[in-house]
Image (cartoon, rainbow, N blue to C red; front, side, top):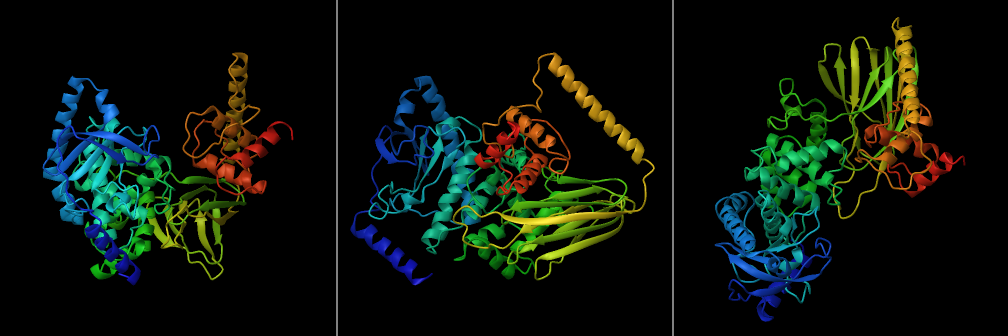
Length: 559
């Protein structure tokens, strides 16, 4: 503990004693208390709400927003009280003993000198299930908005939901973390690792054992939509929770739950705390190596060939990402270049197929960046080997594969940026990396003429479909005059995404070779947007924002 933190905690104890904090108050069902709340979560944007104490349990106080509670019929209130009684029992008999035995105790009797934890139900935005405020753990002279309680906040939308116990376990883990890190060591945990432990609590508590409707099922669904989300760059989106949950599932499955618990009971935070546990445990691994193994796992996930590159959990053993596909002409020589962007600790998967001959892949990034580039080579029998591209001092490297297309049928490269290891306080910057794939052909493929004929027939059918739609008065999804909204990865069944895809297709095969118009903004569309942005000197994000829309609309309108 550094001197500054020591003085801060000492001052905190002094003020708590001499300014009256920590005096337990008698409470009774029906008491009305005003609580400070987070306006960003509250459905009405309030900073303070009036609440009613509706129930007390062995370890919990249950307060509910007074306006919301009074609006409920008496019969509904009775049903809710039964649900809260069940939640109280679940907390006493499962949540509290399992999580405290794993991660350690919360601060008790704590700042309010009361061993019971306060739960406040408030109407929240539909995307929120609950939250925890560190401010409540400090006296008001330090944090004027403090409620001076050990407490968590839950949404009234979930008050009768079977998943309420999952949310309570998640938020209670944050309360434990506050004691184990902030109180004991005077440090604040990195948000991504704090959330990793909290979100994994549903697995510890057995709530993910029944897969249907579980937290794990939702995380997998969200992850598949956006597998390249950074696990450390935290903005609280569903993709942040999905990526960190699936990484934590892999981490614990292969190295044990102590990785989470021992790193919590350390004065170090984030990646440094995990590396400390790895060093002491003698696994011969570190965080970076495990992260790299995880990205490989998401490509192969096969325990029979390599137990290090798989999930054994039956709900995860079929999970695989769909890499961005790069098609090479089946015959002759060709070359293709791509520039992508990424953040630290994000997986990226590109799969090269097609071609026949000797393949060379040249990779490069900026000097000063630490990229790891494992690659997976599949042979004609679908067996794979994992290797690692070695980068020189200029951050360049190349892969050479003889007889690609005959002896080997596909290549997957998985670049990940691993430069930043601390200071994850705000949004991370994005960084570029580039690669060029070239192949020297082995002659003419006898099937090439047939393939070209089939492609021509497909294009003819596309035109016929467009003509039929036009005759029936159905707008051609590839035709539009303007894009008026921001478009981004993960959007589905969106007419403006269809417009975007039609526009990108019309820019030529060097921008959008696949030419698919689906209305779904996936990896292929994102890659095409980045190529378009590169062509017009727009920052390469894959996000269709104001600058990109302006350029697109200019071209659409003949500019």
